[in-house]
Image (cartoon, rainbow, N blue to C red; front, side):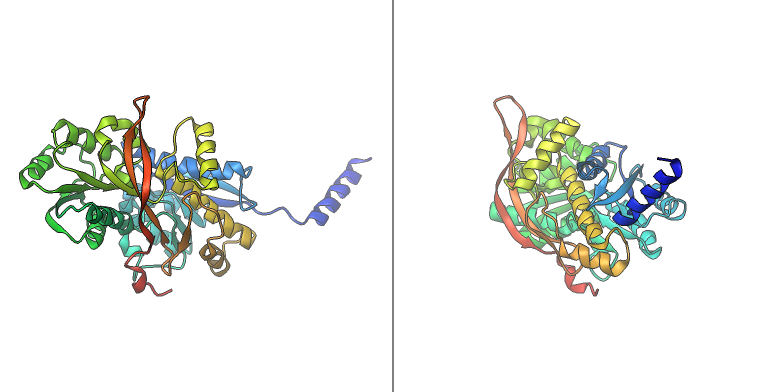
Amino acid sequence: MTFRTLMLAGAAAMALCGPAMAQVKIGFITTLSTPAGYLGEDARDGFKLAVDQEGGKLGGVPVEVIVEDDKLKPADGKQIAEKFLQSDKIKLFSGIIFSNVAGAVVPGILEAGGIYVSPNAGPSNFAGKGCNANYYVTSWQNDNLHESAGALAKKLGYKKMVLLAPNYQAGKDAIAGFKRLYGGEVIEEIYTALDQTDFSAEMAKIRAAKPDAVFQFHPGGQGIAFLKQWQQAGLKDQIPMVVAAPSLEQKIAAAVGDAAVGVAATTHWNTDLPNAQNKAFVEAFRKKYNRDPTVYASQGYDAALLIGAALKATGGKLDEKPFREAMLKADAKLVRGDFKFGTNQHPIQDWYEVKAVKGADGKVTLQTVGKVVEKLQDSYAKDCKL
């Protein structure tokens, strides 16, 4: 057979099979450096695991995930997004961990006609009147996870509390959300710096206030530092603590050990959730990366599954209306279990109580106790007109 005959045969085969599906580029802007870098690493690795499991595809559509580190700097995130939009012609974005970075990056993406699917940050200003048809949050609305912690504090009977969070959008949303379902007396609200690692002054204030319990929101390295200093200050055995997932997830529990034992926490996902999808995900993540997934890894994975379901329905096209219709169907089995989008394209989902326990091997892990709130929707959805 001649070379020309082979070419013709190949062309005929392609005609029978149809043209090759175009590859979709996904711009993944996330935090990979600073003490909070592991949050972005886990979100990235969870997302890429879903792509790898499909052989480089999502929903049967070939994808290329282009990852850049925003260094937890809004200006850096904005610069990366502009490059992705202008030079790389990327239309579909994900990855941002911190709300201050999202606040600088997301508006530019949306104004340029891009689509943003958040695997973590869910600031309140994009959930209500500022909602957008091309903006989806697959993780949580910032207030919601802390509302669940407020509900748990109320259930545990704490009447007077001190609340702490970093002084940025997610920190403000955290305290607002906690108070919404707590209902008890807030003795004091303390706002810390986003890069703070020494909390001795705040702990002196807490000791003097003598609350029934403390709520604090400090993700990543900040959360590790806070819990270690809490124990060192002798407050662990004096004042109970209630937190949401970012302040006590798998990596924090492993890093602080005994300091985590006794802390009451809430989450929408844990390694021990019994559904089949979660069991398979945890096993696959451990096998591929040789470590336990955190909540951020689960959110990266779920975001990829939801994007894949939408790409499958649209044949890889990113036109707003069909992509949106497919996303809002939430036609994917997520590792957290039941999930659907609210009218503002943020999650409606269940929240669980978890506790840190020390095993016979000396390792501290998180065990699910039971549900705290079912099918929780954020309070901003009523103001979104889409």
